[in-house]
Image (cartoon, rainbow, N blue to C red; front, side, top):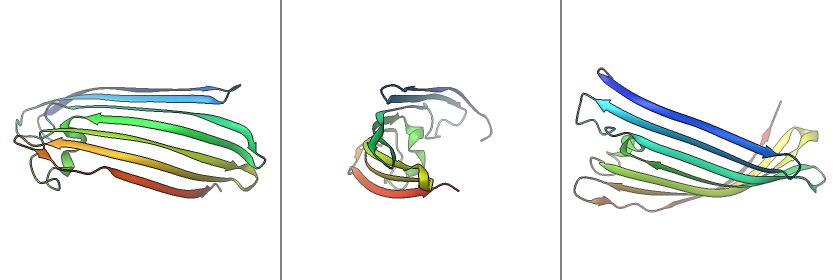
Length: 149
């Protein structure tokens, strides 16, 4: 966009304690827009953070290591859902998207295979200048496999 400037601060960190198998990651973004167009719905910016933690169990099953984890994330600010404005029924002026979930991954090194299952919940709280936009939580459960070749 012409005339658009923004400042952004972001980063991430991850850690794995190999003897215990415990791990964790944290990521964040802080974005502030300074727009010439005052009507732009991204005005004001966005804050986002994400955290996950879990454990790697190398010998739970004889086929390979097993990983269990949980996760939590939050995006706060209009620019996090700016493209949803029309679908949500109005000019979104504030929004908060919260997500959490958990899952597991089973590694099978002999077949270069990973089998995974996870559950995730998404909760959107969005508002226009005059009202709260009605929304329901979304619950997602999915599983699959990945073969590396």
